[in-house]
Length: 125
Image (cartoon, rainbow, N blue to C red; front, side, top):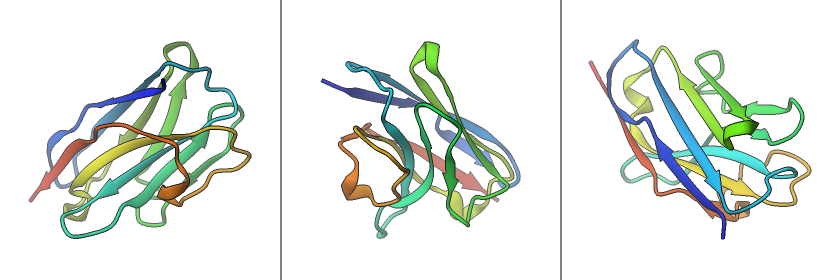
């Protein structure tokens, strides 16, 4: 059973930084795509960033390009989301998600097989 556990959320000031971590267990993740999504109150899940577990492919939402960086540590089975230059509108619950048997990075939440429990990110002025 694949499990995803996020950590690293919290409170940051606008312009500040946070780093989220997502540690995966219970599977072999080559061939997976890993994604970060977020959900603000009253809104749907929004794709933030994604990467393939093997190779160099990454993808970002336009709203976070140049500010957020997704990366992975294969030895630790962990995916990171480095968030810089945070804005008030980045406030949301952030979720890590995984899709098996992936050949490309999908931005559609319904196509992901596994989800973490979410971690709150709050950006204050």
